[in-house]
Length: 220
Image (tube, rainbow, N blue to C red; front, side, top):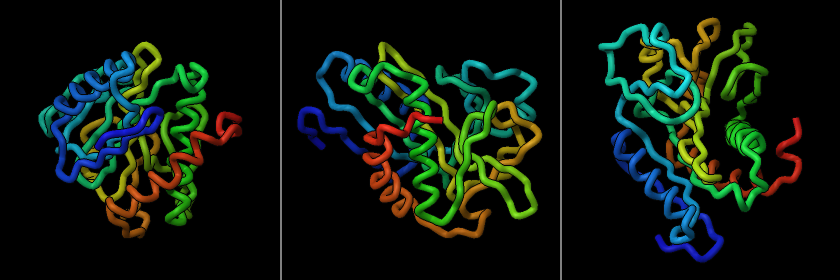
C-alpha cells in the first residue's frame, strides 16, 4: 500500500515469512525510512519455527541445538523461539520524530502489549530486570506471554515484539527463553482464551495510536 507523508504503513503477511528474509526486508526499509524515501512501517507476521539468538545470547542457554534451526540476529536480548501461532510485530519507526528516546520507545512497546492483552481480559505486567510482558497465574506463578527485542540504527527502530497466541509451547523447552530459567512461558490459548490472529491484529492496530500518542506512556 502507498502511505501519505507522515502516515505509518501497516502490512499483514498471510503466510509465515522466513526469518532471514524478514530481517533483510527490515534492513532495507530502515535505510529507506532514514533517507526519507519510505514511510514508517508496522509489519505483522508469523515465522516458521526457529530459535533466534540476540546479541546477549549465551551458548549454555541453547539446551537442544538440534531441535530447530538456530539463527543469530542483531536484535537485543538472548535466545527466543518464533513459530506459528505467535504474532510478530516488527516496528520500523523514526525516533527522530519521537524525541530520540530509546528507553521511552521500549516502554511504549510494553504498554502497547499490555493494552492489547486487556482487550482479551488478560492483565499483562512489567517486571523489573525481566524484559517482556508477564502474567500471574491464580497459584502465583509468573509466566511470560510476550517478548521484546529491538534494534535501533541511526534512530530508526526495527525488530519488535512477539505475542504468544497459540504457539507450540513445548519448543521453549529447547532454550532458556531470554535467559530466565525460573519462570515459564504461556500463551493466550494456555490461559483458556481462544482468539484468532485477525482479532489480535485488530487489537494491535486499535491500541497502537493511543499508546504512542499518550504523553504519559513513558512514566514508570
